[in-house]
Image (tube, rainbow, N blue to C red; front, top):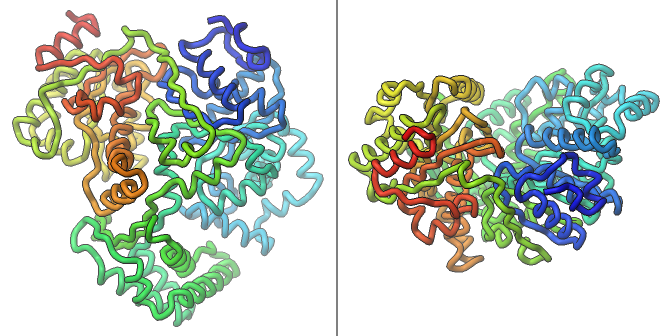
Length: 637
């Protein structure tokens, strides 16, 4: 479609010579919603060019009305992609659009007190503020010189900047990169930022203050918005383990904080008294912890005060000013302030490297508490390839002026196939050796006839282990492909190395065995030969743990009969859909998708699949039918 069909204000900013299929309609729909100050939810599959589409639609309104655009994402790759697209606009159209990518404060810091420790975002804020108050940060002190600020900002302002650009200038000039960013966002039209900048209440307050722009003058873009509810609930939830409490007790002893030590030992005793013996969890009452301490309000006050004292003493001794005592105080405050109608209180036990770890948790159940305050902005655009209409209800969007748009698919019919096996399921009641053997045989057909890499993703590590135990590794090797197996015990570094090895093996062919909802089934791109076929084994419904049951109960109280679907079923379908989308990420990719569970054919589940996946479902009734389909797709007949 000809770019000249766009309105002039959009045409001037769209940097490419032609549209991908569905892109023209998507741009116009988003542009119209923003002009009307509506909120819009966009279901658009991979390959449509969502980033440049939403920027093209939002920028004309922002530039005309003097608004800011804040683009939120979970991944650094996507945050940088926003800047890349703006640089493309600048190169092609000579448009002067100021933009900056920002990252968490700890990622933009040069001070050893923050870089030398693996600290939380909140700890980074508090350490930074303490260092500045006490004039203990040379990088901030250098930034205070007006001549330095003017020189740096005159050089950087007006350019689309990645965080690495700002970090490089900070290192070179020995000034604080975070402070450079704080100044740049005040004059930038576009800011790409991690979700935490707006979903965490404390960080949001600091960010909006630095931005110098009221919320109703901001256009918010939520990338991969199906993740937003969980991100919001994670920001509201808190955990306290016996490890942290023991460290706090030792800290109290070392710094002669006897009152804190007494309170902390009571908390440690409480956690151990309510602990689950084996790995697992149980619900407990909010009052149980409150009643185990003489006065929780006084306890919070003393722990916070003495924790602050410890931090100051550490700073004076040139140590990292973190206090475990202070951390426990913050947890107690979160526990005490939590609304029991909207939170569940848990005792849980997890497996550590050497021993079982007991902990207590206060877990949020309602993401709307975080999201709804953001909806008073100028407009929001929620983007995802796997987003259900229930998103509007869960986030609170349905109470505002909003619209929902399903973008046309950018892929042609011959680019991908989606087939569902009607003779197999991973339902718990039907898991047995015969079922596992049938699943393995389906997988082996996919492996045999796929020219290059294959991804196989299971609903849980338990099912993955069962398939490995019946010998799938050796059978795949016999077919001439390498095998890579995801494990929860792998460190992030080791897992990244494994994925790189898997990708490098594409020419000769390899198979990745993983789990849905895991680190390798979402947020990782496998273009071209890096993953040509994918097997989605089962539906990754969560185990009915106390927190899952509490979520279902809460959503049922709020949404009635739809509660279980919203809180339990749809998140599982999201995971499966995200996994299926690994094989087709661009208009050039081709992919074969096998859904190994007959439940995907049931109206209850099928209706929840995204349109691009639901529309093309083909049924196969046995192994022979799959062999015919995949051989034909890869022209091996």
